[in-house]
Length: 329
Image 1: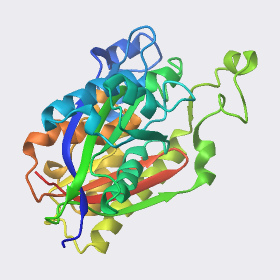
Image 2 (image 1 turned 135 degrees about the horizontal axis):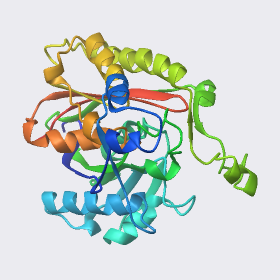
Image 3 (image 1 turned 45 degrees about the vertical axis):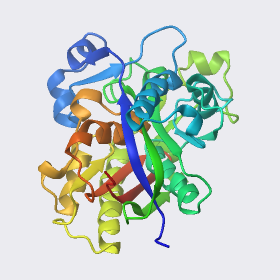
C-alpha cells in the first residue's frame, strides 16, 4: 500500500464587498497613499460591514463555495480546523459555529490560534488526521475580521490589515501528491512586539481597558519587520534544503501577505523571480489567517498537478513556519 499524503482537493475564498482605499485612509489618519504603498505594497483592503457579522460569516461563503466546487455536502466533512485570531466570540469555537451554519452535522472541530501563521499550523495539524487514516475529509479554514481589533487612529496598524477568509479541503492521496513536509516554529519572547493587550484572562475587559484602547492590535513595527524578514526567509530556504529542492524545482511560493518587502526578501533568499510568487497584498492587505488560502484560491486556475508549492508565514507571538506540498489536481 502506498503512503497516504494529505492533499488539497478544493480551495475557495471570500472577501467582503467594502473596499477601504489608501485615499480613504488619508482622510482618517495622518498618512498618504505614497507612504503606505512604498512601505507595505498595499493599495486597498476589504472590510466586513454589517451588524453582528463575524469571521464565521465570511467562512460560510468560502466553505459553501468550496463544497459546491468539490461536489460534496457539508455532512461529509469530518473535522473543521478554524484558524483565526478574531473568533466570533471567546467561546464556543468558531469552528462549531461554522459547522452549525453550514450544516456539517457529522463534524467535530476546534479553533487554532497562531496569529498570521495559523493557517499553515492548521494545515500541518490537519494532515496528521489524514495520514493516520483517522479522517478522510478535513476542512481547514483561515480567516479574520481584523477590522474588529484595529485602532483606526493608529496609522502604524490601520494601513496594514483587512478582512477575508479562505478554506481548503484535505483528503487522502496515494499518488505522492499533497503535503510533503512542514517546519513550524514559535518564540514567545517576541510577544511584547505584537499582541493585543486586553481581553484575555490576564487583563479582562473593563472600563479602563476600553478607555485605554487596549482591545486592539499593538505592534512595534521595526522589531516585527526585522524578525519576520529573517525568519520567514530562513524557514522557506530550510524546507527547500531539507527536500533537496532548487529554485528551478519550486513552481510557486505562497507567502503570507504582511508586507511586500518581507515577501521580496523571502523570494530572494529562495532564488525565485517574482513570476513564481503569489502576491495580492495590494488588493487585500494583511488578512492574517486568510492570506495564504486567498492566494491559492486566486491562483487556482494556474496550478497544475504535481506543482511544487512552498507556503511560508510569520505571525505575532512570534510564530513562523513553512509547508512544502505537491498540488494534487
